[in-house]
Length: 192
Image (cartoon, rainbow, N blue to C red; front, side, top):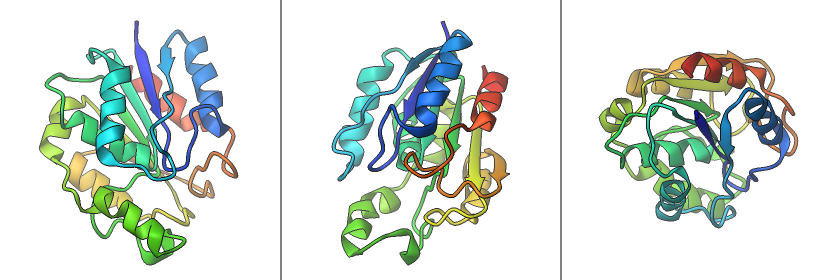
């Protein structure tokens, strides 16, 4: 059975907003969908988030797919660095990958910037990620207040990702963002 791992972002939840909708859509289409609550979402750390993915994914293979939002994208990429198998595909929504990906406007205060610093400054082995993921799709919004649109070209250059830019979706946030993101389902069905 094909499975999808949904990974929420910083201060996110596995059962709110478009995650709730997409889980129901994919289950209806016959996927097993796992949407874990990531540890300490108000103060996320790389090690515990990658460990959580190791725990919930089990044996990954080409029938395993990932959908991540914001910092959840980072967690997926860092998880993929650790596997010696190939997964079916990855969809990254409003993600960022390296220093300079976010601007001062991306953070509410200095404390938030400090919390995000390890995620921004700890290098990602893009070659390992590309080897582990059969295909990568990255989706951005033209009005995201946190993740500037220039990140799209970085995902394309560093990961060979297919880029999709949506209009006026903000940060695709679970509280005040879209309740449905049909593009994610459409792209996942292409990957699967």
